[in-house]
Image 1 (cartoon, rainbow, N blue to C red):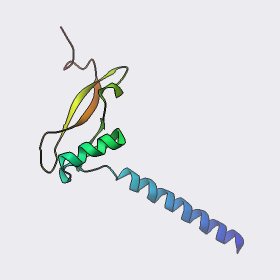
Image 2: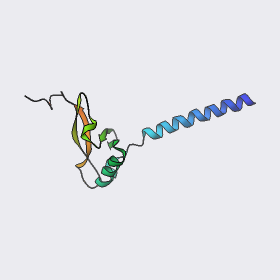
Image 3: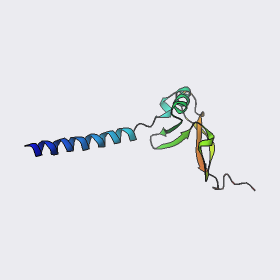
Amino acid sequence: MQRTLSLLHALCLGVGGLAGAAASAQERPFTPSLTCGAVQALVARQRRVVLATSPNAYEAVHLDSGDCRNEVTARPAFEPTLDNPYCFAGYRCVQRNNGENSTR
């Protein structure tokens, strides 16, 4: 009986952990349902946040352009929001040598 309870308890903990992981993966704020000010406040509060810009697209947005280092550089991140289709949310990190950013 004790072993059955222990197995049941372990199973419940495992399922609970998976549910928690799934919930955290779905917690990307959906920018089209938020105001521009709400998105900006969220980025300011968390300093780095993964924003969902559509049901299938998301990107990490940083508060400071200096958060992008090494082989990446900062570019302004304009996200669609409830009240502004081009809301400045912060900065996204992009590869430096992708053709678009190269200098001649």
